[in-house]
Length: 384
Image 1 (cartoon, rainbow, N blue to C red):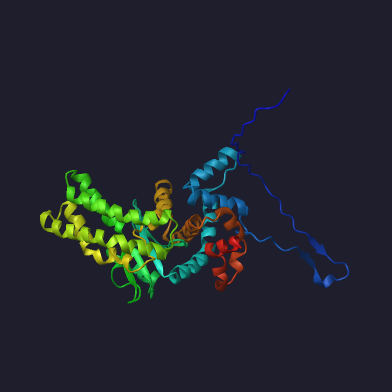
Image 2 (cartoon, rainbow, N blue to C red):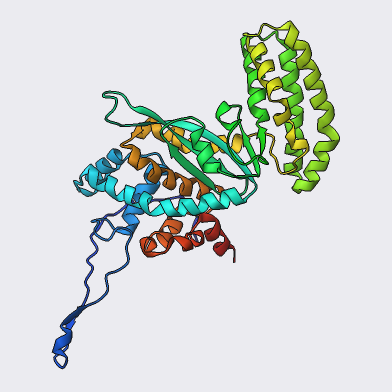
């Protein structure tokens, strides 16, 4: 024996389920019979009467809302790997209990977002079971509001009308960046609110025009110029520039490109059919031109709303697996869970430790203290 050849491989231990017995002392004093029997305090848990420990409840939540694993598959996993036949409703009640606890935290997160001064918004549909339509689901929406470098809040609404953003934004007077959906345009926020739009959405329409007609050189040229504008921000990002330095770079290079794009679209407006893909792209972009170019006046503005769209990905993937929400009452609770999950992802916070540190005892805390338990506040504690 003269030595070893060594190599390392990643290994795994399958999850092991076990029962933890909790014993609380009961004591009686022989010298003070009037006090009777006293029992040790009950341990603080996420769901006091649940058959699941905090770790198991958190595992259900993470698997469903981070990994898009439906509850019924987790139920099957428990039976297969641990021989436990647990009712689907029991697991679902535990998950919704977590959502119920997180609703006031999400409300505190909303106040954080509104105070940030810059919000990106987007919305996505989700099916909801109701008694109104037998055999079909009602189409509800998760509206998402977030800010680059900060958290995200999801707001559940049964419709896609203006009432959703109007209620959420209320008298908001900062910058709101969205796509071109009409619900964002009028009657929401304060009069001083600045409404900006997403340049990537406009670019996408010209890309679609080129896909339909590969000989559409005019649309291809617009895409090329827009790509050059996005390259300015990419250069600033790779160089680690501050927002102020990026604004200087934009101011030097972007105005000429924007002028070329605008001039080209004005020429295309008379030369393309209004209902063609190119015509639709030109009409859409010209109608929003002022809102698409506000980044020259407001340095904090991103060129696109892609960050908000990316935050919708867990919902888009999830609804392919868990298909719909069981009721409209569950909507706000699930929105709160998604708010926490996506905020933790953006802020690079480990989700399981956050939930384990935050959820136990949360129901006993006052509403006024909820700002201490948001992912932003948790991230600040980790940074100390």
